[in-house]
Amino acid sequence: MQFRRWLFGVICLCWVGIGLLGCRPIGSQTQAAAVPQLILSTLQDPKTFNYALNQEFPSIFLFCFRGLTREVGNTGELQPDLAESWQISPDHTRITFTLRPNLQWSDGQPLTADDVVFTYRDVIFNEKVPAESQAPLQLGENRAFPEVRKLDDRQIEFKLAEPFAPFLSATSGPPTDIVILPKHQLEKSIQTLDVNGNPLFLSTWGTDTDPHQIVVNGPYLIEQYRPGERIIFRRNPYYWEKDSDGRTLPYVERIVWQIAESTDSQLLMFRSGDLDAIGDVRPLRPEYFELLKREEERGKFQIYAGGPWSGTLFITFNLNQAKTDRGQPVVDPIKSGWFNTLAFRQAVAYGIDRQRIINNIYRGISEPQNSPISVQSPYFLKTGLPTYDYDPVKAKQLLETAGFQYKADRLFDAAGHRVEFTLITNAGNKIREAIGIQIREDLSKIGIQVNFQPINFNTLIGKISDTRDWDCVLIGFTGGIEPHSGANLWTSSGSSHMFNLGPQPGQPPISNWTVSDWERSIDQTFKAGAREFDPVKRKPFYDEFQQIVQTQLPVIHLVNEIALMAVRDRVEGMKYNGLPSWGLWNVQELRLRDQR
Image (tube, rainbow, N blue to C red; front, side, top):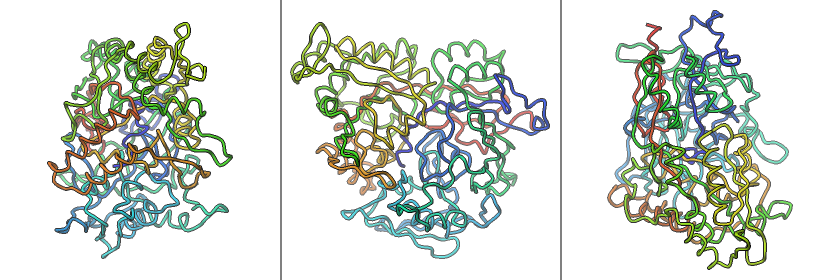
C-alpha cells in the first residue's frame, strides 16, 4: 500500500546467470551447475536488508518475505498468504486474522501471532522507525495507529479508529506492502536505543550483515551477497506453500541475481543465453522488443505482451521550503521560488514533447500518461483531466505572465537570474537517460537550461529521502489497483512525499516546513476515500485527487508504457499482464524445464 509502490520503483530487473564473470556464467564449471537455478539481474546493489527501511524496487523482499495477505499479480485479487483467513466486523473497525497452522521461519523457529503483533505494533507503528507503511495507517482525527493484539498463537485482532477500506491491501506483502518480521531476531534491536535515543533497529540488517543471519518467511533465503557482483538466493526449506500434489514450493532450488551495469548489459546477457528473463520489472525497452522478436524461435524464448503497464513515469521538482538543522534552506531560495510557482510547472509540462518521447524513444509502444492512478484501477479517471500536450508557445506565454523574461532566447526570472536546474535519474536505465536528454533539449527551446545528471540509484535515493539535496528528478511509481497504495507518496505526512518531504524519524530536524493548501486537499481526499467501503461512493474522492494532481502538477507525468517481457522457454508457469509491478510475481510456482 505504501509508497514503496512508488518507489523509487523503478529500476529494471532482469534474470542473469550465476557466477557471471564478464558476460559468461561459470556455473557450468562448478558443482552448482547441477542445482536448478533461475538466472536474473538487477541494476543496483541493495541498499538494505531491513524491510522497514527499504525504499527501493526491486528488492530482496520480493523473494524473502511475505505478508498476511497477497495480491494476485495478474488479476489484482486479494488472497490469503501467511494468514489463512480473516473476518471483518459489521462496523468495519475490527479485522481478525487467523494464521496458517505450523508456520516457521527460515531458522526453524515458529512463526506466530507474536511476530505479527511485533511487526505492526513495535516496528510499523513505532514513531522512531521511518517505515514506509506508517503514515497511511494513522487514522482518524487523532491520526491513531490501529490497536493490535494477540488473541491466541494463531489469531490477531486489529482495532481501527475508523473504517479503513485499504487495510487488507496494506497487509499484502511484497513488493510494496507490509511483510511480517521475526520477533525473536529483531525485538532486542527495537528495545535498545543508541546515544541519540533511536532504536538500534535503524542500523540492523544492513547489507554488511552476514546473509545467514537474515531470517525470512518467504520462498527464498539469502545464501550469499557479493557487492557489485551478485546475490544468491536459495530455497527456504521451511516455506509453507504447497502445490495441489502436496509438494512444497518453491520448485526452483536457487536464484542468482547478478548486478548489471546497465540495461544494455542485460540485453547482451539475455541474447547470449546468460539470462532467463528480461523486462520483468520495468517493461522491455521498445528497441529491444524489435530486436528480440526476430530472435524468439532461434533464441528459445517467448515475448509476453501484457497491455498497459500499471506504473507511471514522471518528473517532479523539489518544492520543499524548509531549512536544515544548520539553518540553511533545503532548496536554493531562488530555484525554490521558480519551482513553487504553478505557472512555471505548467510551462515545463507544456514544454516537454511527450509524443516525441513516445515516437523516438518508445518506438510508438506507449501512450501519454495524465493520471497518478494506474490505468487498470477502477478509480482511474479516463476523461476530464487537465492535459499538457506539447505547446512551447503557450509555455513561454505562461512564463512571461508569471514575470519571467527572455534575453537572447534565454529565460531569466524577474530578478535577472538565469533559469537553470539539475535533473537527475538513475544511471544505467537507458530509457530514462534518453528521456532526460530529450527533456534537456525540449526545455532549452523555451529558454531553460537543464543540467542532466544520471547518478547511482542508491545515491539518488539518499538525495530524495535523506539529504533532500536535489532540484528535479525523473523517476517512476509502480502503481496498482488500490489508489491508497500511493498514499505514502501523495499524503503530506508520508515518508516518501518526495516533492515536499517533511521531518522523518532518525534524521536531523528541519524547520519551517510548510504544507500547501492543495496538499492538504489531497490529504482529505485520501482520508475520505479510505473511510468509504462502497467503490461507487469512493470513486468521487479519487476523481478529485486526480484533478488536483493534474492541476497543481506536483509531478509531471510522461508516458504509460506497454508491458513487454521476454522469458526463456525453459521457464514454465508464467502468468503475465500489465498489472503486476513484477512480471515474475509468482516466482515460487515457476519451474525449469530441465529440472523435471
